[in-house]
Length: 231
Image 1 (cartoon, rainbow, N blue to C red):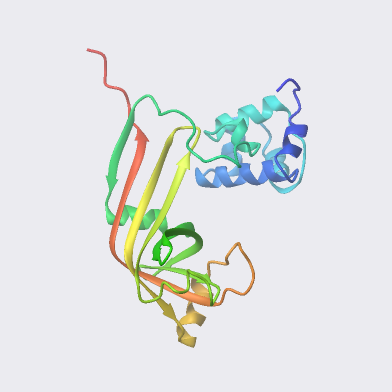
Image 2: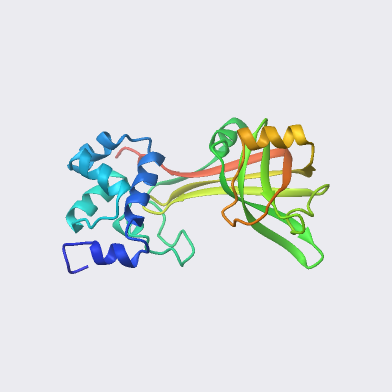
């Protein structure tokens, strides 16, 4: 990028406030306060707060420092690569593939988000994305009454969630298998709405509640390990 102002690139990323939303999302992923992130990036906390809440241009050198502070890339903060599959970067120098125990899997799943339901259909296997929440050791999602995702009730399915860090070439993947069931009881639905409503991104009338009771929970993580000491 030849200019020292990232405003044009910011606009190309979508809405001019997209950079601020990505900054906030990444900061919260790392568990950093605004003050901590601003200190890392050597910038005023007030400016960081403004960036996260208002569409604004940002100097490229400031954006570069901010990307380093948030352990990601300028490309990620600008929304680059959103139309391409994730994971196009090379492996880290010292990767380690490890198994996650069930408690670690549930800890990663518990905030809710987006996962994929894998199911069998007359036309073959399918994997469809859903917004989900976790409650009482089960996975909940809402869908339309006549959808494929509603017709899984009474059948065994798989449910998969993953997370990738493009900048560090690390990530994790969790797979649940179990039986899906439709929940229709008014008291149960009311409880779900209060405590675990997934609010589907797709919008529309999605009032059919499906719960997956897992019988198997497995997961794996790719992380970076320290290189062995020189001999």
